[in-house]
Length: 161
Image (cartoon, rainbow, N blue to C red; front, top):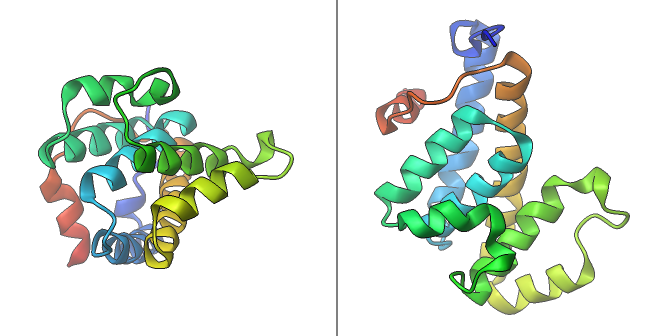
């Protein structure tokens, strides 16, 4: 499958990408641990089938100290004891917030209650925003058939300029 378009080579696409990156920077500066941010981003990207985002968030999580075993099992986090209660609450939000059309009520009351037990207001706001931003980025990449496999951290930093 060949890429349809490189949004970064389009003036409008590049402007949008810079704004999305600015949102990501706000989330990155929150008190939500970097590894957890990457696990949530990875899970959303797996659900949406976004190869470049899976590539990016796997590498960023590893760089932040995540183990290969947990990266291998994030797609089946419910079936392992490797994730903390806080991580499980965030991953449940990631799944339910991504699969809105699959769930009658969107994010369940049980997931919301567990999220509120594990995180303060600022962290909840950051996690909600993270799920929304990653879903948007996934859609840009899936629609344009962007390819994964060649991500390096310098690529993302270039958006700040």
